[in-house]
View (cartoon, rainbow, N blue to C red):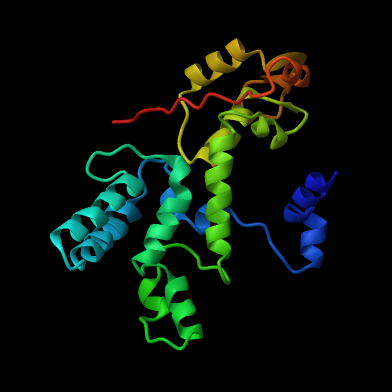
Length: 234
């Protein structure tokens, strides 16, 4: 299947990756502001928001300044706005437009323009070649959206899994903690998972029930995703 082969090309097996001299990397190394699993990353309040405020103030008109700041507020959940995980691409493109990521200096140097050094823009994630970080941000946005209306989450775990493993996988993608009880209630109501009758003993604690994805449910509900109730913290 062409799509399956394409997906396989994007996610090589570990041994194939080693042969090419590559390594697996967590995507939050490239987008540290996207990981809210331990609360809002300090980089937003300490670095990103102040720099975006300066960028907004550099606009030549009051309307321009407000428009720029409104974009920053919406993208990064500033001034009490809600954080929207699906805006990963919007956030990266805003930082690029504001000249705050190393790729700006690298691109300008390639084009023969004068700009600040990449070192001056350090701290806003690890840069990537060409527009690869933009491509990765696009993938994050799409995957975060897709798990809410398609069962792609179950393609990222084994044939059998514990509910804790499933929740950890969802949180790693979404970038925030889920309300465990509501997450499990929603799974139960959806009919997407069923117990295998077996237990996982290597959990580091109490044995946990193993589940599997009921693929036959796709015949009844082809557009089916996983509820992602966020755990609200003070």
